[in-house]
Amino acid sequence: MIYTKSQIVGTSVIDANAKLSYIGLFDVVEDAITEAMGQLQLDGITVKRKFNVFWVFTKNKIRLFQRPGWGDPFTVQSFVSSLSTAKMVVDTALRRPDGTLVAYSSCEMCLLDIATGRICRTSAVGLGSDFVTEPPQCDVTFDKLDDADLPQVGTVTVRSTNIDYSRHCNNVEYLRFLFNSYSVAELDSLPVSEIEVYYVAQSYEGDALSVHKRISVEADLLSVKRNGATVIKCRIRH
Image 1 (cartoon, helix red, strand yellow):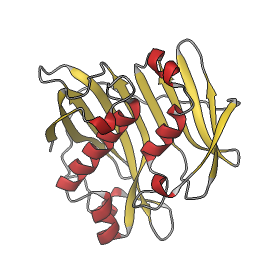
Image 2 (cartoon, helix red, strand yellow):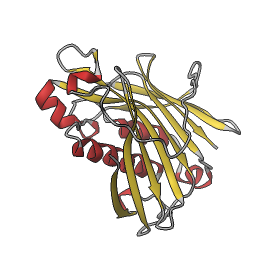
Image 3 (spheres, one colour):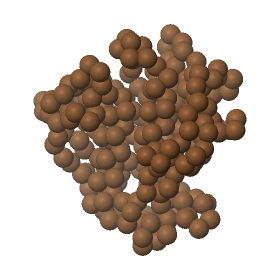
Image 4 (cartoon, helix red, strand yellow):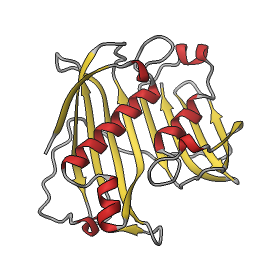
């Protein structure tokens, strides 16, 4: 099944130049994934209620081809491209009305048991070998990211509005922490072709986090840590 919807670039997802922001892009992708899973009755709220488990994003890689502006129309397609006993991969394509790609995301997810916090098999929510996946529309592979010895550039405390229904810091909020390490002027001149994020651990309300970053010509490496341990790591490729 391919979940499809048409929308425009709204005010809540634009940046200082009235273009689709990087955080807004992750918001659009998260909404599309959640809605696609809802069509399958496998969204996080449903599986939490029925099976006492919840989905967590473990990896997300987004290729960015263009930046539409406020009011520009685009179509979103979201679908399961891979399924194993331990994880699911959901791909999301954003396209202009003429079919050209705006961005393409490949997001890896797994299930955690609410009681134990341990990874569950996807069969825990009824997914099996008979589930039909869709072929990817873009070739996306995940790379290894090394966040060792990144200089610290800031600190942040997880607040109540960063928390989602799973009672942990929402995945998009980490992107906000990272992109807030840039000034508006730096974001204006930042060339971004790809953003890859590894969600390594969870954080919760009140947690004190440190933000780390190293800038280079080809890519910026960033991470968020709690007590020196990595929570997420990210590469922004230029």
